[in-house]
Amino acid sequence: MPLAPARPGEVLSDSHPRDLRDIKGQEQAKRALEIAAAGRHHILMTGPPGSGKSMLAARLPSILPPLSAQGALETSMIHSLCGMIKEGGISRSPPFREPHHTASMPAIVGGGRRAHPGEISLAHNGVLFMDALPEFSRTVLETLRQPLESGEVMIARANAHIRYPSRFMLVAAANPCKCGYLADAARACARAPGCGADYLGRISGPMLDRFDLRIEIPPVDFRDLDLPPTSEGSAEVALRVASARELQSQRYRDMPEVWLNSDAEGEVLDQITALTPDSRALLLRAAERFGLTARGYHRVMRVARTIADLAAQHQVQRSHVAEALSFRLNN
Image 1 (cartoon, one colour):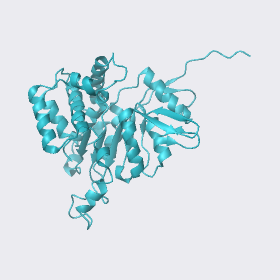
Image 2 (cartoon, helix red, strand yellow):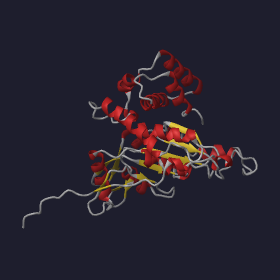
Image 3 (cartoon, one colour):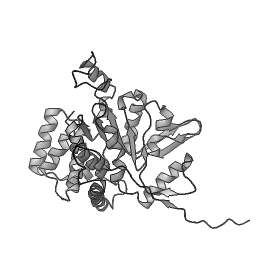
């Protein structure tokens, strides 16, 4: 019996009811999300409970551009291996995965009896949100380091090695200490301030170095809660993110291994950044004073390039480098 001809599947359209306009205050954090979305930069948010870290992360999908046809197909193929495709529909929305900190190594990285893809592959072309980052297993966190650099993960089995793509944006949140109130003398535990160093010390230096942006989320001022919603919401921010992404698409159109600024390295990074003398002098002084690693130095350059793209400027200016440094050195 001949096979029936293939029919095109449905392209699902997902709405984003959560809007950045819902968040009162936290303007610096919103700016950090915009930069992260524009260049697919990894971001770490630290702050006390109730400061809005999870709310900010949950609204990140509302400012991300839809997936390209190729990206939607890649992501859907991975999801289909886990039975997540319903009735053949393909979504253009970037995936947003948020595993619990008790998740096992196979659940996060991939594996099991059938070597299924894990959360880092299910988040391919999208976002992996890891709340309470220090609570994750140290082994899991260290295993993430290689996929964050290479954009893929290898699952080894006795009879085969399976390679899954895992090019995602890592968004992580953490309390400043176990109880969460390190900066509040009235509520902090008896072990402060040592408990803060012990708690965040669960994140190794090499892992911490892979975050392009690090931002402290302060407690929300009660007076901000009475303010009217801001005039700028997710729709306005998404337009700037889309414009910056389009600039990067044109810049890297002849480079098959580079999609966004976060992928640039080596000579490509030097060419696209082209720092002015005063910008480079600022970056060198900061690197020497704060002990930036070579990886950290290059990540600042990538973020500065993204900030310039958001401003639609060809040249990376001193102000762009300064802003990139402010998100690198504030904790």
